[in-house]
Every structure is written in structure tokens, then in C-alpha cells.
Amino acid sequence: MGVPQYRPEDWRLFIDSSKRSLKCVILHNGNLYVSIPIGHSTKLKEEYENIKIVLQKLKYHEYQWLICVDLKMANFLLGQQGGYTKYPCFICLCESRARKDHWVNKVGPLRTDLTIGVANILYEPLVPGEKIILPPFHIKLGLMKQFVKSLDKDAPVSSTF
Image (cartoon, rainbow, N blue to C red; front, top):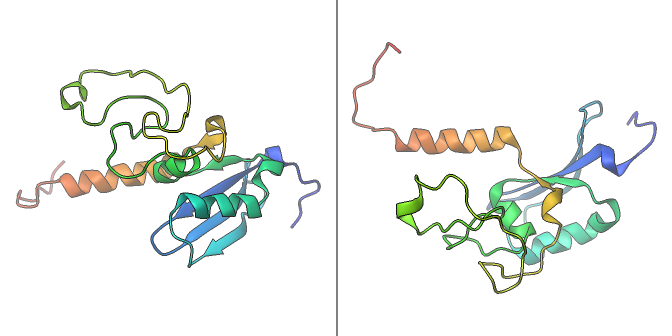
């Protein structure tokens, strides 16, 4: 593949999942080399145990790549409860149900530990939190999708901006 020497710190693991499939790809940090698909399944569901098995098969603890994932996969990797929870964020402890604080508080208390049974942590974290990076383009597409869904469908279409 043209790689003179493999060094794990020069690569990152990208994991993406949906209801239909789970995909794992190794990406070069400088994009000098081609992306390498290393895992694909149409049978595994988005569940903590399945992600744990995938990381074991990929020997993640041997290579310790940075992991590029979306927010839902970050929750799986850190052992958090899915769905509408009181503490959905893996970075801070802002309460999702505290509606009066949503647009008032700009900074919330940082999440300092991932203790099982506390603040929606159900399982042992599979990777350290500092190894997780978020893909900005993936997040931007998600935000745009939410924006478009929130547009007034009955408003007249304007041709000028």
C-alpha cells in the first residue's frame, strides 16, 4: 500500500454504525495514504457488547489509535446509557431535562469520572475519553439535517436571500 513503516500514532480508527451495518476504517492522519477498511458487518447491532467484541478483534488496546466517531458511538465507547437520558453528554454533566437552563448556562460542570451507576454510566468504558475525536463534517451534516427538519413547511418560498 506504499506505507514505508506502520506507526499506530500516524493513524486513527473511524467507526460508524447504523441500524443496518457497522463499519471500521483506518484513516491516515495526514491523508497521505489510502483509507483501509478493516471491519464491516451487516449482522451486528448498535450495542455495547458488539462494539466491545469489535475492539477486541481489532486489537485496539495494542494499537491505541485515536477513534473518530459520532456522538452516539462515543456513548457506546464510554459505557453510557443510550436514548433520552438525564446526562447525555460524555464531556459535561449538564442536565438535558433542566429546560430553564438550556439557553442560559453556557458552561456546565465537566464530567470527571465514568463510575458505573453514576450519571447514566452503565458499563465499563471501552476506551479512554481522551482517545475520542469527533468528525466535524459528520456533526455539521447532522446539525443541518436538524435545521432543515425544523423549517416551517407552510412558509412561502423566497427566491431572494
